[in-house]
Image 1 (cartoon, rainbow, N blue to C red):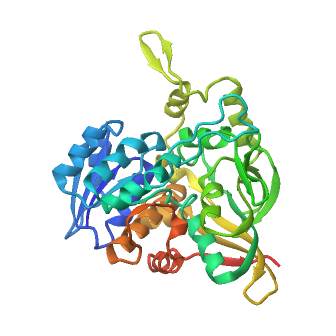
Image 2: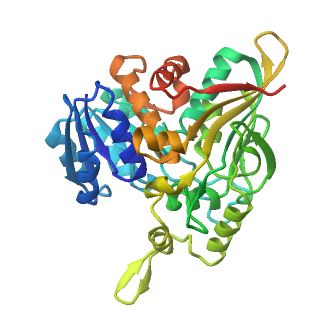
Amino acid sequence: MRVLLIGAGGVGGAFAVIAARRHFVSLLVVADYSLEKAQAVAADTARDGLESLAEFVDASSFERVLAVAQKHKVDAIINLCAPLFNPPIFRAAYELGIVYLDTAANLSEPHPTDPFNQMGKTLGVDQFAAHEAWVARGALGITSIGVEPGLSDVFARFASDHLFSSIEEIGVRDGGNLTIDGYAFAPTFNIWTMLEECLNPPIHYSKTRGWYTSEPMSHLEVFDFPAGIGSLECVAVEHEEVLFIPRYIDVQRVSFKYGLGAEIVDVLKTLHKLGLDSTKKIQFGDFAISPRDFVAAALPDPAKLGDRMHGVTCAGTWVKGIGKNGLPRETYLHHIADNAVTMREYGCQAVVWQTAINPVVALELIYNGSWAGAGVYCPEHFDAVPFLELLAAYGAPHSIQERI
């Protein structure tokens, strides 16, 4: 398979290293605005039978993305940029009629006057609106196939198909005990994305009320995580699963909550109060820059923190309902990434590795025909079993914890 990877950051670098070990990839073109970054990632993937190249690309330009994809006659475009760049990359894949994968849906637009009480434009709505056009084109696009969203959605589909006869609630819960030496504050994934998710109005779903919003980082609860992580305070943030899961699964309630911890919540709230989460550019001397881009540039690159990071991270989907045997059941399907293991085996810190492995698995399933079709889909559309089996074959199995 001839693959164009756009984005040579932490997740892109991890994707390349993982994909290079799977022999269904024959060509890997690593493209980034920083040619130096792309060259470094491409150099890390060298093996017999794999041609690995680096290209410059401006991901904000449909024409430039299209030109790189056409030049190398690729079969798939893997978009591992910030979701701000989704539209031109998505359009280029459609134009060529090839496979498209990303790990986060198109950005939302909160309601302009009443964001905490009324829904605005939701995550990924433009991508799903293009479904029929993609069907007619014979092309397959899958949005949000990272870890959360992505593996968390696969867990929801598996639980619905194989563990429960009826589901009362599905709650995606993410937490970890990662620490980073030498930094008072250092996010473990892209701060631009963290600000977008955590400071937008979170979305909730109930079957009786539909989708609705609330204040950022609200609905606090304490959730007990496995693998020695323990109990963490979790808060609601905007996330794709709440929008996607009810599209395919009959469920009474859906939520998403991060175990951010009080310190990170305070930092994010402070950035918001100071206007440092804004994406609108301001003039500073001869330069114009958005406050959010400045914050992202001022903080350490998460991809380069692996050798200072310790602990594990847990991504999972908690499901409550009636089991196949007719009795009440409550389970937590989850996946653990240990930073010591991911650094030793892949040279990648745990958070970016845990995100990157899932689009590689999805791409291999498309290659071998297990996931197929035309149109634009989220992960819940596809059979979860081959995904979880292949994930285990990669040496990264999931676990199921019974909660009753």
